[in-house]
Image (cartoon, rainbow, N blue to C red; front, side, top):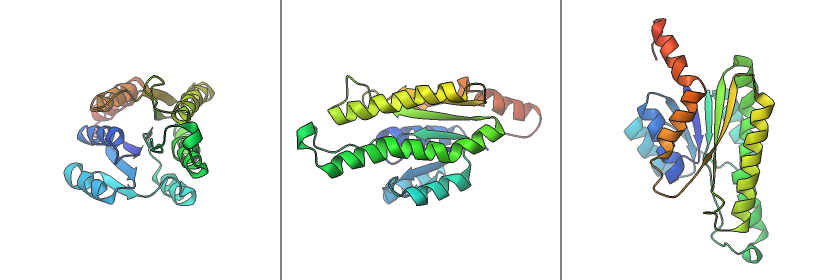
Length: 203
């Protein structure tokens, strides 16, 4: 069974993606802070819950390195309630950059070596639409995530690892699941399933 890690899985965008993948037969590991939501996802969809905060770098790194996912969906978008830049506390800025940017880089760095060694893998990074961003901080992080996705895609081209940036858009977010499946199909995962079935190995 192909394995996917979804960060931010207890918020609406990540949850929509995680449950869609689970319904399609993926082994989904859902990383989030809301233990009740994670328990509901496990009970309703067989999703493996990972209750942790992305700011706990060492714990997250050890967890994801041992997991060796085939696909990582970065959906952990968390922003301060304050939208005015001059109204932000230093802790607000640090939290937003840590969760939305630094964690994305660190998780990617932790799992990329195994993907390149296997010659197959994919990353999908949710990016807030600039026109929908509510603050300068959100627009700044969104631009950085999009730039990272593009730069990494260039760096790993030809390795069998694919990197996609996906616009978050407006709620409701049920469309995100099919969009992620489409991107993964374009990355060769659909044909990978078919190939395994044709050789009698199951999904």
